[in-house]
Length: 273
Image: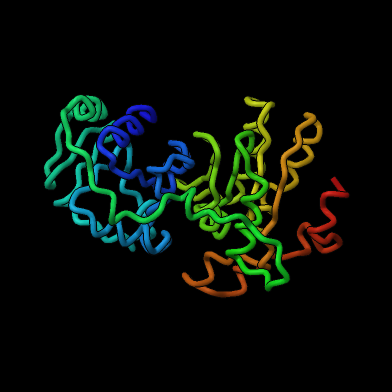
């Protein structure tokens, strides 16, 4: 559906916005691509534009709690047409016509959309990273990560702060982003990098994972080495399961360093492997 969506957007001048699950399904360097919508997690300008739209066409999207920003999305169902593999819904009425409906819509004679009120594209908002002597912040960290991403990079984000931070990191070709955003499977990213290079050895995975997820499956780096693979792994160390702390805090959210890293600093892990 990627080509059909892009062709439709160019024909009508209607901007494209993705969800967690749809990131990099279309080219993020396209001037019509605005970024990610995920409720309160989204960029403020993108969120405001989406939620104030007269009408939204959701292609291939399922209304999951993750895609809706843990139910913080403010979307009016009466202004939405949802089309996916299970059918289509409009005005709270469902019909057994799925993605083929979108194919018919693209054939229609539609007028050009006025984009004057739309926010800048994601590419336009992605300013060059400047290495200044400033405090290290989460925003600047992910801006720096973006400098390592090119058309031959597959960005793989584990669940939690890693995936939220990677939402605004620009990928340079379609299908260059992976994340367990549907099942929220902690520890997905390092093994996923092995799968990526097994299938596409010409691409290089860039993994962003928290210390909690890394302790679950990080030792699979040894499998990558054994198979002559070269993923880049960035560990976000906040000494615990940070995403879960606001839900219910307690000692169970602290990562027990003795399990894996009592004798090893994360910064030295590369030398060990």
